[in-house]
Length: 167
Image (cartoon, rainbow, N blue to C red; front, side, top):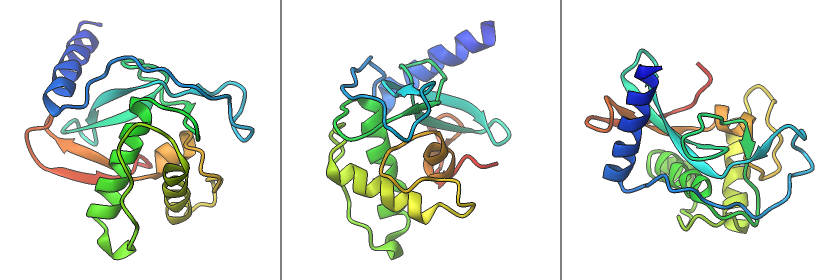
């Protein structure tokens, strides 16, 4: 329990240093028709530590800031930090790090509009190796596990690279 408290405190400090704070957000949308009733909206983000041997950190949309629950969705009409983080991950991992894809950059404004939905559909088509992702433009648990995310080596002090969470 003490270790989790320390990790949570470190994650909040790291969030402030990186410039992507974890203030609570509000989502304004209804559940997508493709999501099970048990999945709620993503309303914030949380930093995760100890990925792949403990040296990598990443940030994901979660049900609320600091909740550690990534079993949530984002869709058109929502506005919050979870949306902004998906937009950032798309721009960094797909537009900047994989320029050969030729994908257009999108605005990182935290609003899930048609450009964000189109970006999520591109990710869903590109990462759908196992055929387990619905290509519907709705961000959910399958998209989260299969899309590439910025991962920070040793708590934001080293390299940044992109990889998915299918390990």
